[in-house]
Image (tube, rainbow over all chains, first blue to last red; front, side):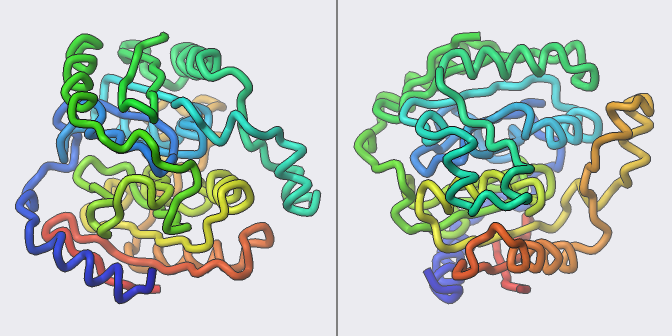
Length: 160
Length: 160
């Protein structure tokens, strides 16, 4: 889309915008971590409204990649809970590091990036929850849960 | 919230869910990069519907932190455009690395993390757009724009 098209779409959003007075700290003290996938609306899928939760999204919804943001959220903005979900049909199930590094020309820059794909969806969620529960900088009192989201149905089920 | 509360909220989402047949690649070939801030609905603010764009979110909406995800999106899922916005009232304007490292006990783990705060909102957007335009692994033909979102009004304005 062109910049003008985004600006026009935003004009409509502004015309209907009524929540300009929300506080900075998330009112439900929650962080949602999930994938960047275009088919997911993380807040809506969990019944979360504007102002209630931080939403961290990256390729796969990987916890390691979300760590910096989680620490900022916990230390500066008082969140106490982490809800992490990965999803069916994820692109991260379809490649290995060497595949994308080859596409990128196998340059030293490409070799230096861990792209964090995974081969088993449920295990990837369990691994990420374990990583957060055991990380020395993540608050020990955090409530951390792991889920799988089905892009076909919109349903989440808890697996960790 | 409890796991049961999320599951209950999700049941309502599932009951109204009608978009289970969307394709994996984003139909608008677009990536939106922005902050995890609870007050932002990135897709809605730009008139983007489910299935149309990858949405990457982290503390501040920093491009360096989003690089892995952007490369996965471009190389595997064919996106051609990056729309990045930071926002007014961002928590990243309120601290320095040494502040959060002190809160984390100044451990070696905490010392090893760059938390990526910024002192000037508009400059941070320009810096991130420049970083992406100059990065050797980001597609040269990418259309990259930088914006500021006002949490008070819902309005975006382009600054890069």
